[in-house]
Image (tube, rainbow, N blue to C red; front, side, top):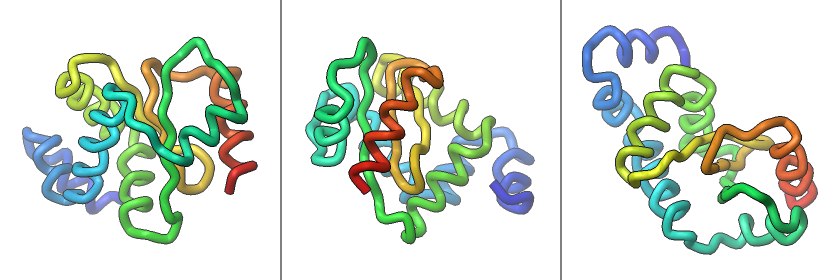
Length: 133
């Protein structure tokens, strides 16, 4: 997150409300992917990744976006800032009543998982995602 935006988000007390105000489309996106993850909604890209990777001992859902759109940039900005990522994970975990973790993967894919993934867990997902792009 750039310094100007970070100042706007973190200078006040209600950081989540500021994130929601500055990044409304990203907020809507996180809301949708959180519920889609816990409800097990199908996604074409996610299904293709899972077909390549096979069965995993953890739950994940991956969606692919156009890497040139503003929403993709906003998502990367929010998840690239550790504080906003942790705030979003905490909030949406409470919203859906189970732990969820957000990551970016490749250039423009979004990954939701049931725990923070290790290198050994995420590398096959990364390889599958780049193969599909």
